[in-house]
Length: 154
Image (cartoon, rainbow, N blue to C red; front, top):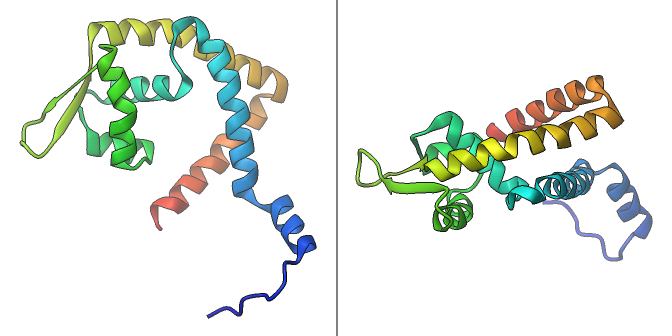
């Protein structure tokens, strides 16, 4: 067991924050989310909702368990995030082949909303890549994929 320090070492905390990947990822995620949400505003959807709708589009019909695995999300959190989409008539959640499973599918309204969101999403991506460059995007995706792979082993 590691010995607990008796006093707060502010310099150590500052150094930890300066080099912490999690801190920087969370800051970058907040900035990216704000940018994408702003660009998506005309659709009335948030970037988190578009992510769920796109994944459902690609996998439907998809069980909540499988969707959570693909999105690297907790099932409970995913279910909570799907509820507003279901209320708004964008997705349908119904029993699957097995009574223990629930399947998510897009409604026709959900498909229309994904079609509306795609150009806005592309605009947001173009703004980011326009500022930071295509090589930056490729490097970022490679690094993030490696991190996700690491997390799947935990």
